[in-house]
Image (cartoon, rainbow, N blue to C red; front, top):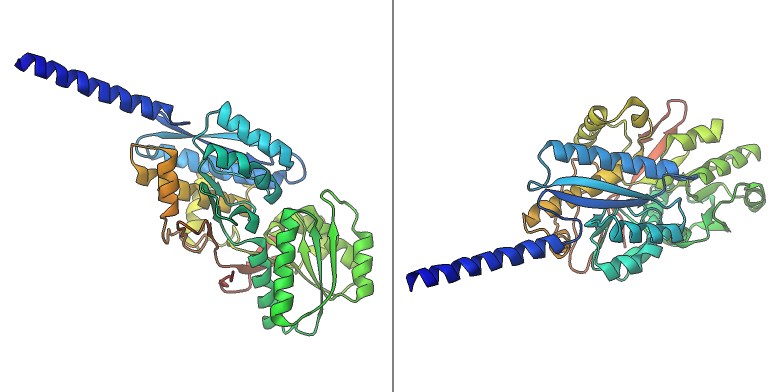
Length: 400
């Protein structure tokens, strides 16, 4: 009888072990030794400098975390898909990563319109997702169960940046204008502009939209000159900032120029030529040159360890947001322990409170009803001659 009971106990134990193994094995992108994470970003086409910088930071984090033994004993693998900054390609990309590459979670989600195209599939498949690349209110309003947003929206970012410049430079009597792309991204930029105009009682003389891919802004800038604009808020993606600056210089327009964070790039300075000196940027991460920030010094040291000299030249502010997103995902996965599931990671992300980033952003927090952690905004000034950006404000809290 004793032998029979022992045998039954052994069979039950083996069955439980087999069930546990099957449950673990069934979890997408997770084995006993590795975790597969995905990224859908533009690494070709005009916005490729965003996607390449983002991907390089993920690769740095991947090599660093694996050199430290992985997360709870599992090594990390990053799989990438290039959407070329096209919404339909972004949707195809996340489907391929999930169904072919078998990713566990998503760490890169391209531009605002691209993420918008991916959201129904991400929600349907319940993929844990961190977006630190392009933030629009539509990404978290209403809250999406598995999607977590790092940083302020363009609306919050531009409103905070405009308020700082108007108050610190006494620009209340200037004539304000906005140029913005006519999509989800541009709509959110416009929200920030209108919010600042209303809150500060400013005179808005023009709001001009443009189609994605526009190369010639001569007509738009002529309209702004005729309207007497002395302050331009730029809702361009990357090159559009430079084109607007050059047109303003050509038209001999004395302006204060404020752009959202995609203008925090040395190629934008360079493409604008002499007009690239002195414009302002609202961002939520400090310049790469601010090595007095502990998190920045650590990140740059890692890039010097794991990247070639040519790769280091491709780093920019999107590298910082990607790295912060990776640290957030690392923290959630680590807190899940060995029993790693998508639902556990979502739960751990949801309960994140004041996760520190050593100064790369404000501390990160989420909740059951809050899927965005808006960092404080910094205003930077372009030093084109020095090929860098200088911080000209203290961190500015954002409002809803």
